[in-house]
Amino acid sequence: MRLSRYFLPVLKETPADAQIVSHRYMLRAGMIRQQSAGIYSWLPLGFKVLRKIENIVHEEQQRVGHIPMLMPTLQSADLWRQSGRYDAYGPEMLRIKDRHDREMLYGPTNEEMITEIVANYVTSYKALPLTLYHIQWKFRDEVRPRFGVMRGREFLMKDGYNFDLTKEDALHAYNRHLVSYLRTYERMGLQAIPMRADSGPIGGDYTHEFLVLADTGESEVFYDSAITDLTFGDREVDPNDKAQCQAVLEEFTSRYARTDETHDEAVFNEIPEERRRSARGIEVGQIFYFGTEYSEKMGAYVQTAEGEKAPLHMGSHGIGVSRLLGAIIEASHDDKGIIWPEGVTPFHVGIVNLKQGDDEADAACQSLYDAFTALGLEPLYDDRDERAGGKFATMDLIGLPWRITVGPRGLKNGVVELTSRRTGESEELSPEEAVKRVAAIYAAL
Ligand code: ATP
Ligand code: MG
Image 1: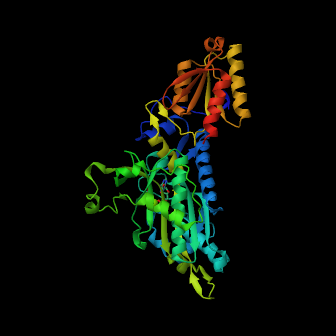
Image 2: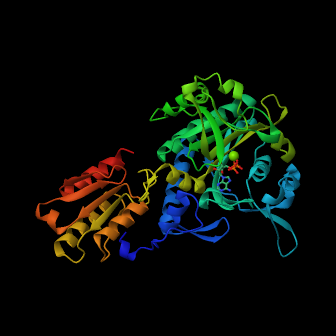
């Protein structure tokens, strides 16, 4: 993409109403525009990152055998009356009437709808196990929408639902989700720690929230610092192997890590003092096993091998896709702007032409551009007729992890400059070598 032809409405001023750094940078980098409280347009740069995050979520869900689909945003009130949640949900639910006075709502989640679908089509244990998911917009009329996309009213969520014959199978689905979530967040350059959370009115021990540590997080958390040494890395886990998934869960949940709702001071105090941490965190996902409650209410039963009728064991599992943009920026930025992890960056590399209109510089930039494009990478070429300082400031703000600077002086010596956004370190290389270097970084992801 040539910057002169792109739509990147960068703001010079810091927006006054944005309280946290991710919100400020998303506005300043021209990624989002607020349309009303907690509701945003995704401008091209923001939309590109949103799509990258979505793609990682899709890939990791499908890697473990979960099946994508799409349910509507608008749902009928009657569906929610069946589960008893229409009244229970309260003012967070946006209720709408159509022209025939039929009561509708903008879905805050999809347990009822998916269970109704499965109840209608799945009749035998032979169709199980089954995990269906979608990535769809949700609406929750939050009391205090704030912090940009972190607490929106309209937000994008991946929500997945497992249907199993037995509790044991459903707990395997729970463990499998934990495994896939660990990989998902790491691909986005994030450390998201599974923490024991509150299961609410349904009860039970089977829920974990995934938290990214950040001072601006809305959750209060307590953990053993040893947990931050754990990474999922590139381990191979067979998603169908119960013992393997269970082992990963045990490894990642055996250390103390809890949200304030489940925090137990006495247990916490058993951890050596130097490892005890209390901090803030951003909830980027949650997994939940809740048994047969929805299945019974929505009539999701199957015939077992013995010919008996059994309600399905279910769980639901969510990832805050749009919130993740804010979480990633909170975890990765400096005072000049965003620093995108390679896995989610909107463009792979920035090309800055120090002397637009100089034949040699223009030609060198164009050939870098063509070389990256031929390799399947997306460069953003700042071809505007602007001062170098302004171009660098824009590149730093929008946070592309790699920048190549091209100018007549370097070209005389046959070199361009390759700069890492994260470390700020630069190196002079031939244009061919610079392309190779950047391509190798992305090939290794
Ligand atoms: P919270 O406690 O932050 O209100 P929640 O526990 O009600 O969230 P879930 O129902 O678990 O949310 O939804 C799954 C994920 O969707 C959350 O982990 C979070 O990342 C994201 N999410 C929830 N509410 C919002 C919101 N208002 N704006 C953006 N993302 C959200
Ligand atoms: Mg939650």
